Length: 281
Image (cartoon, rainbow, N blue to C red; front, top):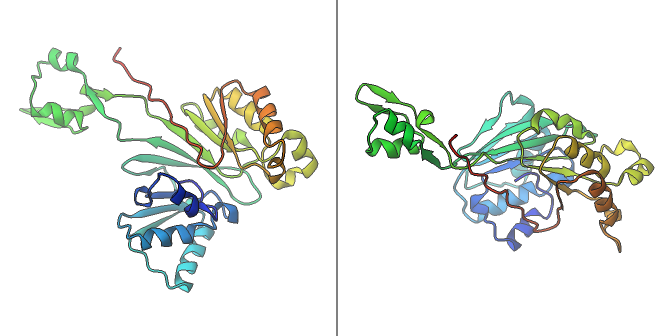
């Protein structure tokens, strides 16, 4: 999960998602619309007897506030809670199902994006190479396919030499509030999806003022087009676009500058990233 606004747990209860499968929560910055739902969500998970550990990746202030809230409310969790202070991270965080890189952004306060790369991709055997190297079928085939290196006689067989991924690793960047999409440039070359705020249209942002630290649809769309990002999902829209004409002006502006797959996130919106199969050359 990336960010946890005040009504997050209520929306989760209306969805098909389960608290029991939520193991990592990333908080992009300290503003309340991105973190006020965190104590309630964790407490509800505990009341539902969740046992598996939960990791929180967040700014130090959010972690301090979270622990203070639990102390003042005498909250005791049924699961281990591990917190990761973003300011102390020197390398990507590795979990069994994904890797997460933290990307510094630009907002009124310190803000971050998260590049999430999937793991647990089934592997396929390079049968021709195994045959060519005289390695006959046996239990070691299964171990290699599971990513394990194998000692066969006096030879050590490396899984990476005799297997390959069933599909290309899927990667997505989900951003907190950010006025400079260009800060993402070094992380975008291999992503499938960018999720980015588009709080205003360009015209409205100029009227409101750039001191807000937010992006406009034009700026984000132009960046995504320049980076050849396949899919752009825009979110975090100002309340001024909730009226009769809704998101029409934002959509019109983004579509003018971005020719890829474009979506505007709303409650219960889902998007599945296609698995692109890999083949031996």
